[in-house]
Length: 371
Image (tube, rainbow, N blue to C red; front, side):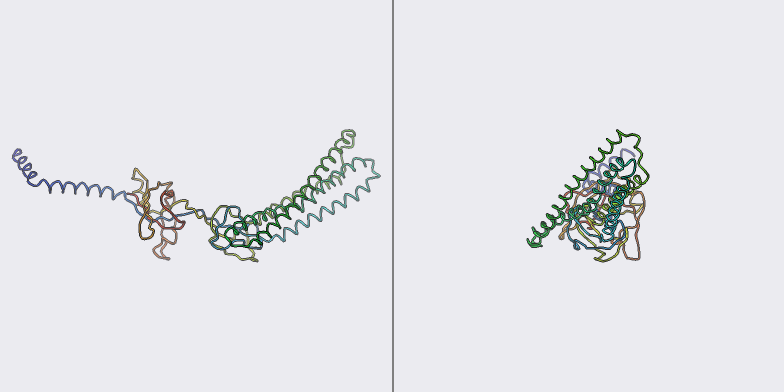
C-alpha cells in the first residue's frame, strides 16, 4: 500500500508539477505575510522643530516689538523691548543716594579735623570718595553699555535689511551714527572709570601704608564703617539694576521664524506671559503616536528602522530613519490628528530622527511604517 501510494503521489506531481509549485509558493507567501502582519505598524507622524514661547522675567510694559509675524530672525536678534522707565528711576535713586553719601563724607571730613585720628579718617575718607566716584561713573556707564549692545544689534539688523532692499541707506547711516556716538561716550566713561579705579587703588595704598605705621589707629569709628557699608550696598544695587535692565531686552534663543505675537506695545505683561512665539525653521525630529497594541508589535521586531513616506507634488518620496526613543507614558495626540474636535485620541509617542533625502517642513504630516 505504501509503495503504491508513493508511486501515485510521484505520478500526480509529474502530471501537475506547475500547479503544485505555484500552490506551494502561495502557501509560503501567505504564511510569511501572516507572520509579518503581526509585527507591521503604520501611523501618521508629525515633523517637529524647536519651539519656544518668549516671556518676560518680571512684570512690565511692552515698549516695542522689533519683529513682524513670520519674520525670519537670527539668534541674539532683539525681538521685544520692555519699558525701562521704572529701572531708570531706580538708577536715579541710587545716583541721588551716592550724592547724599558724598556730602555726608564732606561734612564728616570737616568735623574730623579736630579728632585725634584725623589723619586716618582723612585717608579713609579719600578711599570712600574714590569708591563713590567709581560708583557715579557706573550709574551712567552701565545703562549706556546695555543700550550700546542694542545699537550694535540694530546696526547688524538694518544692514541685513539693506541687503534685502527693505530699508534705505539713510536709515542704516542714522542707526550707525547713533551707535558710533554712544560708543564714543561709553569709551570716554570707561576711561574715566579706569582713572577713578586707579585713584581708588592709590587711596587704599596710602591708607594701608598709614595703618602699617600706626597700628593703634586700625579701628575706624562706627560712622566710617556705616558709610562704607552703604557704599557696598549701593554698588550691589547698581549691579542688580543693570542685570534687570538687560533682562528687559528679549532676544531670539536660536535661528527661526516668528509664528505668533499675542501682545502689542503698551500692553502690561507678567512673568511667564507669552509675548512672542518662535519656532525653528529646521526640522529636528518626527513623532508618531501609537496605541499599546502597536507598541507591543513594534517591540517584537528585531529592526526598529522605520519607513517614512512624504507626499509632495502628487508623488511620494520614501526614506528610512531610526527610532530614537519610545515614550514611557501615554499622552494626548496633537489636535490635528484627532478624528473630530470632541474626540481626543491618546497614544504613546515614538521619536524618530530626521531621514536624509526628505525636505521636511516643521508641522508637516508624514506616514511612518514598520514592516
